[in-house]
Image (cartoon, rainbow, N blue to C red; front, side, top):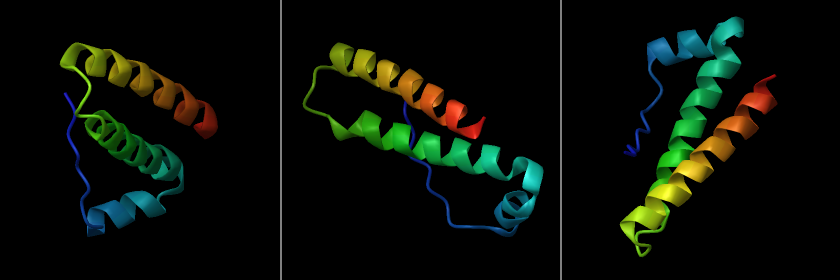
Length: 71
């Protein structure tokens, strides 16, 4: 299932963001989850099974793209 979770910046988030080792990973994980959630909900007119297949394909594709960008 998809959840859109866009939270305002908090003290913890800034501390995590400024930590150089965790910066890329945490930032891109959050961004990827947000993008995947929005993409999953963007096409409500498509039937459920087709939407689920497309969303799974897009999720894998996004994950591969972002993880290759991190490395």
